Length: 269
Ligand code: DGL
Image 1 (cartoon, rainbow, N blue to C red):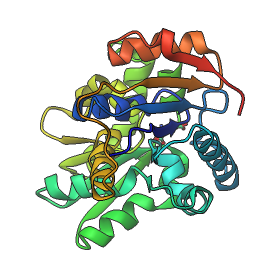
Image 2: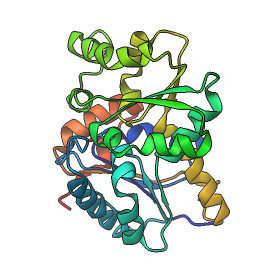
Image 3: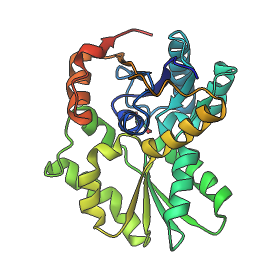
């Protein structure tokens, strides 16, 4: 047993989709969530910038004595896994892309898989590589969606929002044209706008939540190391952001359905 917290990070609110899944699956686990809102979005940055920010996030979470790291950010997973692993040393580091690719491969019937992700994730080719390792015959169509994270971070998440609906429709059109039967929400922000994406793709396409998929892999890793928390206790939940805490806590509370304001602090890394 290990009752230390899990360190989780994203560029902003997106990783809360992994937090929601973690709290449902393992409420006994304590965690420190870091949203690097001052530097969001990551998806339009260079690989070097993403690596530097990711390393900084890992260093910060190491200073909080975490027992494992969940990289709840596809952009960091795709572009900085090696540098994060070398920074983390013995600490286990779990990313979102392998678990999401595995979930997509297990769900697809036609082998045609779509991916919605940031520009930096799409440019990395990480989803094509991960799916290719598991199902070499599968075809992946990945679409960069640079407009979505800024909308989510500003609280524009309602499926009725005309700008959001138009952007989502545009990004989903190539996936519909490719005839995919499964779409990976390859940015952890996107499950927050799932109703808008569902509306654009219709009812029949399976949607894979990359943040939620990663939680299963994280818990398996902890179990193998005999490092799960105490099942009789309730986990401690802390939130840290690098930009304005009021907005982060307000939007985060709305998404999670509980008040995270008393547990949220602002820090400079
Ligand atoms: N939520 C992140 C991801 O999964 C980062 C999005 C961004 O900051 O551009 O890629």
